[in-house]
Figure 1: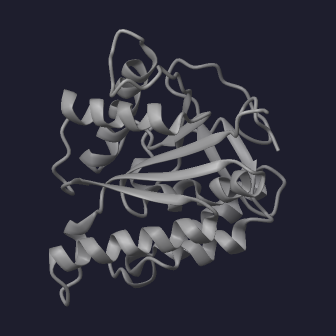
Figure 2: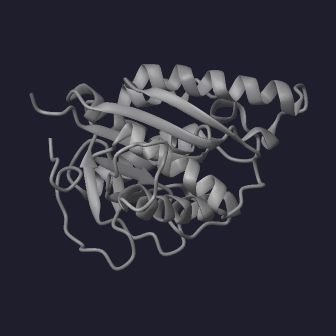
Length: 237
């Protein structure tokens, strides 16, 4: 029996990767892939005035679980603190151990440049964990080594140098995507940024230039092979 394929999306905060690539995730979940949204923090420091950081942490985790369910995946939120992520061996090892458990066929994460330090740290952590996950010399709870390729996705805070390589047609998935991201309070109620409007418009614009109704984009890691297609390279739908 062929092993079930797996897509893991790694974001700095609950809500990041759903906004960036939630429609892509739903497309692959519909095709029978296991889909996991891995959040390094809850993104709790952006709490609204009416709720404490502690209560907002719980709310964000619950919102992430609801969004993941709608998109056909599952949500995992680690207990690191928003705006306090660090590049260290402890978190790299923790991510690598999870990757050996989840054994992703493909990983999607933030672009490497961002106005938010957590966002720019996230792909560095994913890349460092990629090495530790794949090398047999590291004993991670006795789990077998596993190598995964990764791609970057599009976030309004991560646009410096982001020039899409891949446009994925998500026309059939976009309504479900909008329902999923609307589970987040900040997406629908933020007074500092119009998240829902932006990502709906972004999907429209990316669809226009790729001759689809709606599209989301991916980018190869810096120095990687650049080519265009209708889906994740090697796994087009």
